[in-house]
Image 1 (tube, rainbow, N blue to C red):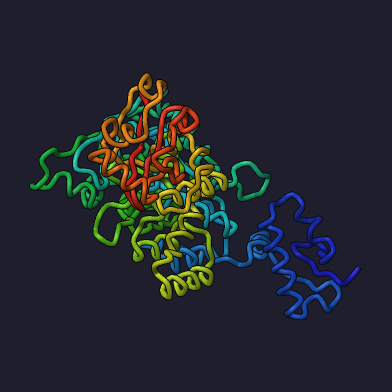
Image 2 (cartoon, helix red, strand yellow; image 1 turned 180 degrees about the horizontal axis):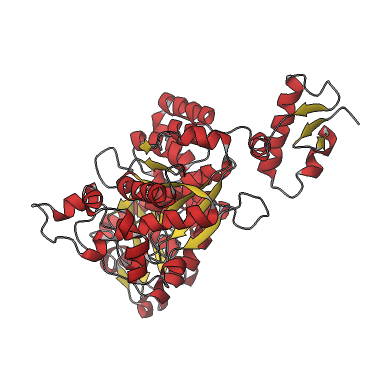
Length: 497
């Protein structure tokens, strides 16, 4: 066996690296091999039993290839504000950090992905991510960025939503391994439900003054002269409840960092202030926020004409999800690929260069859509979405069309005319000219239809047909649709009812 080195009082030999990391995933092993290679290059392994003076956190940083979490977010454009000392502390200590998640729907939407990605990068850098479900705060409603009070949900609904949201977060975070920095999901309702009002104002409320709370921007907007709805006491107390969450996690999970959107800075700093005032100013707690994501045209990110883009495939199909990312502007794609993908800085810079050389190929959008659709849904869903997308651009085949389920078919041809034909007429044997003209209105007359058929400019389910073609049940997609294409770009999805 070759010479080894000591890592946290353990002799490590290159031959044993795979064995040591057998309980970790492939990414961990890659990072460990990277460290060994670096040690070889530095001539460390050429000497017997080189001693590396290291604390456990330093060993983890070696395993994670010395990633600097704050720097990682910085180059990705994911930092709006960061409390002084945060980066220095995290570079020396394994840190637990949390993001609060609104549980008022049974699915995350893509607006939540920024927080999920912050937690993901936190875990990749060797720190411990905590996802906090706002079961208690969800019963109050966060006034930050809101102009009026939201409807409140009962406990049973919030608990149900918690279960489904955890499944979605598990596609980003490692909750199940035995790693020291495995993710944790908590619900603030669990520690707030037995807290009486008198106990709360005695133990927590006395540490934060009303003057301090009213100075927060989220409060000023709601009680200012321009506000029409005012602010309830329930909402006014929100920042105290969120501040207590940070205090609770600080005391029970050694959580030193809270992260969130830029509009959360006031609530987060209430938490750091509460920790210092209640536990003593020597107790360090940190805050980090990311910019609110917007579109280049000033529109709201994550919204389409039909509403939110959800992670739940029942709410937003994988095809619609893929299309959302595929259709973002060049400027937005360049920003989003840094935020929502796990590609490295060098990889992204290369993709941006390639895109600049041939923008019409939409390399940025395609790479972004592939990365995030595969992660949120699956590789199979991504491939199906790509295949379905080809149909509208003339590259699809009859076989491709027949593989689409009804929902995907309707998604692909959303917005195209959908004339209806009675099933009794179709089953009795309808002539092609009659079908294309009188019954569906694809053509204004039999004569026009006949000319286009003669020019081979009509397709049924992606097959070119002539006047002699006989329609049958074999032409039905999902047993109820026939796709008619007139020319290169005019589609009609005929429904047999």
